[in-house]
Amino acid sequence: MTQDQAEIVALRALGWLAEAELLDAFQSSTGADRDSIRAAAQDPDFLGAVLDFVLMRDDWVEQACTAQSLPYEGLLAARAALPGGNLPHWT
View 1: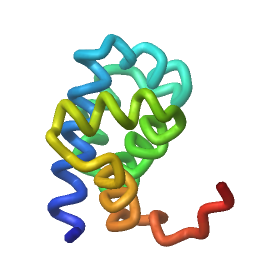
View 2: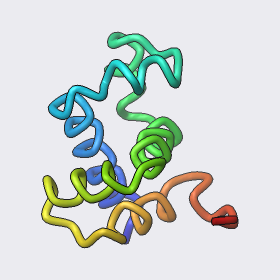
View 3: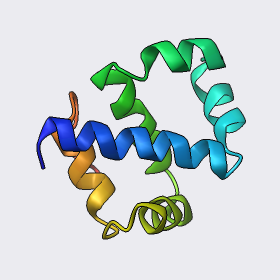
View 4: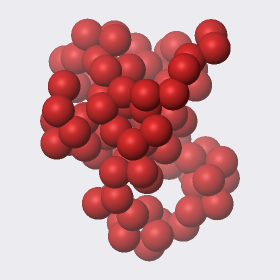
């Protein structure tokens, strides 16, 4: 997956967070408000953080992937293509 493709996946995951009514949880976790989320949505590092958040729970991964018609490993592939995604996974 290219970085451009990964950014699209992450943006769609961000949209899924809003639709799934999880944006407040994301904001609480990151300290970001809606205005800063809008501004940061073009930043590949921020998009990596969006995917990190969604990847915290298997049910979120399943739901976000289903919403995008992605295989379940699609979010991991997208995360790997964004900055910081090449770090080792300990789980």
